[in-house]
Length: 187
Length: 352
Image (tube, rainbow over all chains, first blue to last red; front, side, top):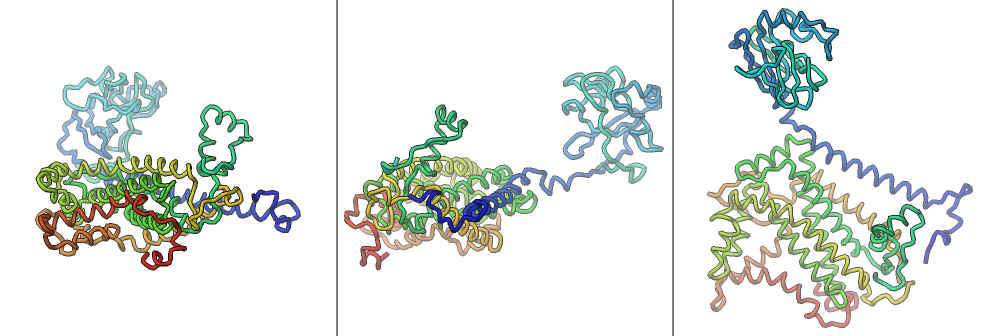
């Protein structure tokens, strides 16, 4: 039976490399590239499809939100809290010494200049993704008057900054722009 | 397995030896497709098609599982979900065209594999069981292909489902209730679509199981060869690896070139434009025909146009169609010819 010992010595070059070695490496390389090329679409198909990406910005009419009220809008299939802060809530947020916070940020950094009363944050707790309470009428706002997450007890203040509980970060402020006095575009 | 001079698995690597003693999986692979499976040295390219069929099935399972992540089996949205796959899902067009044309490639390969069996009498003793399992695989693949074709819920899908289940209505007395039971209604609708999807997902894995039995049965007598004369000594064979892995690798390359040409340059060549029209129970397409791989059976079905004695033409056509395949189950015992290979049977060769 043909084994490696019976290979014609004429096909072995001076440094002991056989033609067969080259063929083996070439064949496996071409096969490997082919497998990778086939794998790419199989992995990529799980990423968000074009219709999902097309829904990645949303416009919100804020004209009906009275001072002290908040609404829940939907952006990327997730809740966004749009809150019209009262003067007392703004004062409470600004009174806090930022350096004592877990995720130090001022209210001004979290709102648009000249629109400090409009606090727009994701309604997604930064701990494990539950929707915190406090946006709808009558919901518990927690001891800092902002939001309270019922899942694991994270407490956010009136600037939606994390004050207590397991969450690592403030509620995320999504990229947004006031396109007019009454319309804000998120995303 | 196979011939008595088959090499035994002797792992050199200590890790492989450790694994082999506890779970002889490396041994299993070695004996199945490695150097431990001696194969007749005179096989021609017709013997490539078994491996190609296995590859085609795996390809169909992979693309199919992925498509099922995006497809919705509901009569209201099925058609739209297929268009969603084509337009929105990343690479969805390629996966769907790959799956649809993969079915055609699968049939090209298994028809060649079956006709190889006919020509070289591969079904004869001691390989009857391989043949019988092969017929079972063919029936499973046909059922799977038909149900898969229904899923896009276009015009051809809908009327295909109606006509194929209509075959069962030809059976006297129980026919009509049987068809209604199969469809879960009086015409194909949501119930039928959902069960077809469920079975279309299940049957390929059943097929995979039967293929394992098919290969198991093959490795007992070992592979046949183009002369039809059994190999007698070790010098008549070569180890599967590297000899036939290399040859099958070359065949696979040719297969992939043909397949890729179809997918990328003519993805709708073997399909029907009518299936891009959503299912309409009120109107049958004027040019309705099955997919090409069912044409022989379609021809048989249409050939019977008048009642024979007490048997109505409709039943006659259905009986003839089913017997055309079921007779394969008896082939090993119907054919008593002592000569196996078609090369030595001049008259047979002419008819073939």
